[in-house]
Image: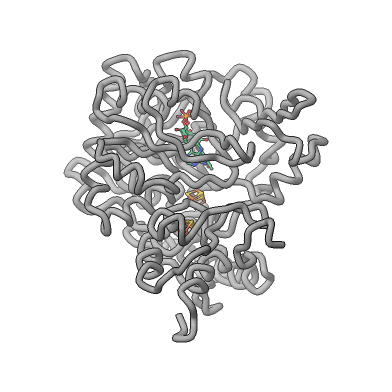
Length: 426
Ligand SMILES: Cc1cc2nc3c(=O)[nH]c(=O)nc-3n(C[C@H](O)[C@H](O)[C@H](O)COP(=O)(O)OP(=O)(O)OC[C@H]3O[C@@H](n4cnc5c(N)ncnc54)[C@H](O)[C@@H]3O)c2cc1C
Ligand code: SF4
Ligand code: SF4
């Protein structure tokens, strides 16, 4: 920060340097009369300053924003009996399984495990509500924060959303209710809420369960637009959009007033991971595997993606990583009471076979951060995630290539976003 920088520009630096993943926490911290999340001309959802933002608030934002800070599982939650895998982090039990209710398994993104666990938490009165996201009611390709109080609410929010999604937009409103709840968000959202716990004691008091999908990132707005173009649909005509679910992965469904068209998951994402177009923050993500959650749930496709043939009748199987005592107790209680079916235990080696892209990214983060530092940009503080140790195990030339690659991206403008402005101010 330079002494002449305004508080607003300091917040915008996070966005302009490609570090904002759009979680919404800064709006909740600053107050919606000061900072508001909105769709900006690039198609992302970013914070726009609309009131008097002060430096003290921006200091807090820098300390909680997952673009600038992400830590691993708090030390106090790494229990005796947990193993800390260099790539996969702390875990007590990893198993393959799915929702006990076939409807939940079918509707869910993979095998419905997160939905089943959330319903179980409500039905056993362990929590009063779930803070998570559903399909946006305004922007069909976006996700939108929601509070779920019933099985039907939770089921209505099932499925993964690969567009802009701000689960933490109203987190202070959720805390103000003073009721115990569970949070489901991407690993970066979990990291942000853990960060907030250092500033607001109500977080650790009220957030009783922390659940996350393992996350490789989501599609940039350009990537989404290109998909719609291939489908022959104008974004303005969209009335509904479902990325996946109703099978595993299930069809990608595009709805307009004229009707619905369906495509395969691979028509959206491409046939291999090199075709994914992700936000810059996802490319330097230190934790797509939900290290700070009680439970992380992932896909279990060998090689990291479905095949067109294999996914026709796939009912969905999650890999479920229980990281904490709380997470393991929940997983086993849910199995005992029929909310989950556990097929068999697996370990980190199999996880790496299911998620080769997560392994590749995890070992590349430290040199990419060096490239960011070389270019004089904000270097996010990612701690407790073994990043230096993982990079030290890589050949020097590989690390150099990752470092130089990050520098080239930055110099080429591929890690830069425009100053946030409302679409209508164009
Ligand atoms: C952006 C993204 C990227 C992913 N990348 C990978 C990957 O690389 N490898 C892998 O194995 N799995 C990945 N997943 C996870 C996978 O798609 C499933 O979500 C996961 O297996 C859990 O399946 P489920 O059937 O238990 O989920 P469901 O029972 O369908 O529950 C999904 C839950 O996730 C919440 N949710 C959905 N989208 C979002 C979002 N954008 N932000 C916050 N919360 C959300 C919903 O509110 C719901 O509660 C990704 C998911 C997302 C959202
Ligand atoms: S990542 Fe979240 S907290 Fe950080 S600037 Fe973006 S919306 Fe705000
Ligand atoms: S890849 Fe990382 S930064 Fe990107 S959405 Fe997933 S958890 Fe967040």
